Length: 206
Image (cartoon, rainbow, N blue to C red; front, top):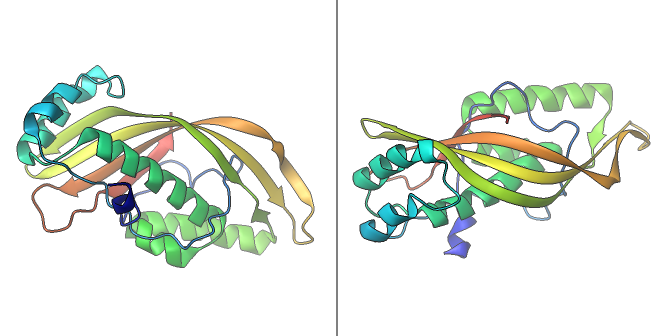
């Protein structure tokens, strides 16, 4: 199932910030590809997982609704795919890779990312960020309205961030000191649709 993660496409709406200007990543060696947040069948096991330690109590009812609407949904697989999507989206943004972002984010988010990238280019600045590790990924909320499902995940990660000027000189940050970051991303999908991709529809700081 891990291989499926490299097939997901995120549609996301950037929240109150354009994303980790001064905390993180590691340049992605490969072009970001659609990442599928997988689904595995077994409704009984999924219901049991709603009490898993990676799920906040307030998300339990919503997850049960997701499972009811699409019995093949798998919480563990979803979280694995969400982490892959988190890394790929950040790295594409840090590298100013708008083509990759177009495969990963929804139109509104792409516009916000593109604006931030344009501002960096105008200032002659580049980001040399690295996502050191994702300490945890936890589902903090889940909702279903009709067939539209939304799942919110909190990511706790360590990011080393450096901003360089046009000459390549460091003007902010340090690659030797990782910064703790706490992000909340919301993914959305129409249940039982032909498109298996969950889309990132909002990002914010925890």
